[in-house]
Image: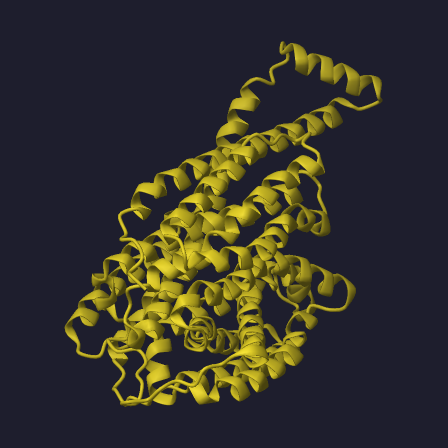
Amino acid sequence: MSSAGLAESPGSTLPELVGGTRLAGTLALSLATFMGVLDISVANVAIPATAGDLGVSPDQGTWVITSFAVATAIALPLTGWLAQRIGAVRLFVVSVVLFTTLSFLCGVAPSIETLVVFRVLQGAAAGPMIPLSQVLLLRAYPPRQMGTALSALAVTTLAAPVVGPLLGGWLTDNWSWRWIYFVNVPVGMTCSLVAWRVFQPLETAILRKALDATGLALLIVWVGCLQVTLDLGRHRDWFDSPLVLGLAIASALSFILFLIRELAVDNPVVDLALFRIRNYSIGTLVLSLAYGLFLGNLVLLPLWLLQHLGYTATLAGVVLAPVGVLSIAATPLVGRYVDRFDPRVMVSGSFVVFALSLWLRSRFSTDTDLTALMLPSLVQGAGTAMFFAPILALILARVPPARVAAASGVANFLRYTAGALGTSLIVTAWDWRSALHRSRLVESTYDGNAPLTELRGVLASAGFSPQQQMAVIEQLVEQQASTLAVNDLFFSSAVSFVLLLPLLWMASGPPDR
């Protein structure tokens, strides 16, 4: 991605999109973004069914997720350079068409090897869709309505991770895992046709610049090795595994070489000069850290409900649903005012709300009912609405228009990487904290412990054998240990959001409009 992102022809004036035309274009871009983000999470709940149908283990089935994530992350920073070569509108439409075609091929894949290959290609096609959706929306709306335009994408970007597991589980249970890919076909076809018709007049100028192949190779190595390290680490005791250690070292070395290379060439794959813009560097860092916390906790809650409280996938989705519902309802209102207020104020408000919702979750117990479980999700939904559009407005506010595609691609690349890292670290920390609490609880389960003696008496009177009594006690210990660990992580995440506030306010206020 070179230092110039997109360029206009000399003396050109963009036609104005109004009324139904702009609405149709906004809906097409939003649906395409939703589809791309959805496919990151929709396949998660279908892994057991996919692996079983294709005759492989669930561990092998996880490559369906990893392959897509790696390809998407690598493709994101290339968005600016590709847009220069063929134009932003053409690239967007081609990406959607390829994504749709590969979705169908994923659905008909006869083996796990074929499916993984198609998922890699599908992830590569999905990469440009999200940043280019932002670029095209900003070209369709006047500068004073930038917040309104970004809020349209915020709804889909933040609702998709909530809808994904629900939709994937329902389709898998009622139809087949293959339908999680087939549903993309009609949506993708419609989006590509509408986007081409609406945005063709807003096509960007073509700039022929060479690609830094060495930088691209280093990018692929360090991102790929990092993602595989995160994917395998939990299951192979992290750095106790020679494979995981080797991958981590390869990722670190290639990352260092990548930075050296990108700072030395004239046309780098990733435009590191963007980070000289204060708001961009601070805003991107805040976005990445906050999204890592957001996504990690979004994954942690249903894991706890499913594995230790006996919730079904549907009920776990019901607990999370208020996050998406309220964010969808409130984001248009936020978008209306984000152009009039300092985005730092709105983002600060979202962090406070996130901290409150996580603090409420840190008080959960194994006896917490469904209504009480849903309340923090309702609170979090309000914070979600105030987060995404304002932080993007802050990040892009001082980026020259010709570099918006490059800036958006790099910011989204770092966001995705931080989301994967945050999820892995939070789930790993849950394992560690659960083990710690388990050891402490086991120490208290000696025979002289009065509550334990009383419980064993109750179980004995119900006809439980000594072995069955111990099995029940072990199950209760495991359940309580996991719950205490979840409480720890929710509380520490709440504190982390508060600690992000000073970093956020190191960015400058909005420029004069």
